[in-house]
Amino acid sequence: MSEAELRLWEAMTRDLEPLVKGKDRLPPIRDTAPLHGPPRRTPQPSPARAPSPSPSPSHADAERSGPRPVPSASARPPAPKVPPLAELDRRRVRQLARGRIAIDARLDLHGLCQREAHAALLGFLRRCQADGLRHVKVITGKGRTGEDEGAESFIDVRERGVLRRAVPHWLAEPAFRALIVGYAPAGPAHGGEGALYIQLRRAPTRT
Image 1 (cartoon, helix red, strand yellow):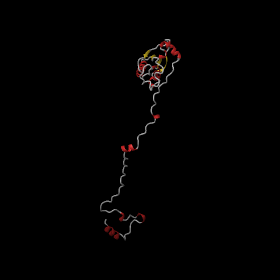
Image 2: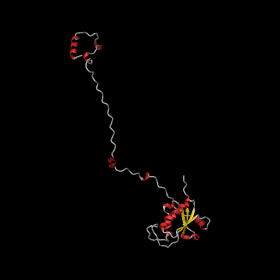
Image 3: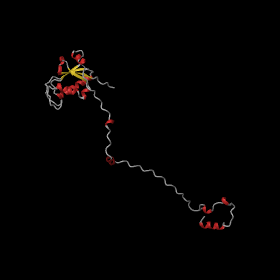
Image 4: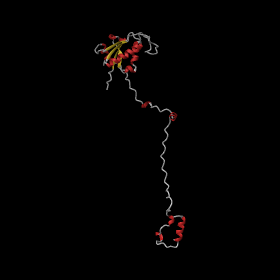
């Protein structure tokens, strides 16, 4: 109904007595929705927007943040321990000198410079250990006392005849300690101070 029709209706029904009195009286027509015209639209709440994803850090941001921390030394796996050298007991040395314990192989380093002798000795001991040998003899020669005094390295010296003092230094290196238990000067019948008895470690078992 239009506004004019509503006013006309109110004027005509102003003196009429309602059949229902008090609180049960019907609400006035003005409160009802109009019969003509488009229906009123109830405002709908706008849908909530999804939060936009945070931008990933760029390469430049990563560079500005600095290098990644390096794991501490405690986090790294420990290096394998190299066993120390042991002094051969006198009883074993006497048995080797008297022939009661067999000498499985021998190496003569005469005529080699120190670099050649170092490589030959390491290869010899590796082969002997791989073959399961236990006792070997290495002939160094007695050399001349003081010939290698002042040398910077026992490997770099090119002179001959100084292996008697160089070989014990080499045997203390980690590569040699992994191969041998220990060493001792040979008996007089086997060269005395010009040779060494060397006891080999057992080859590690392969799993």
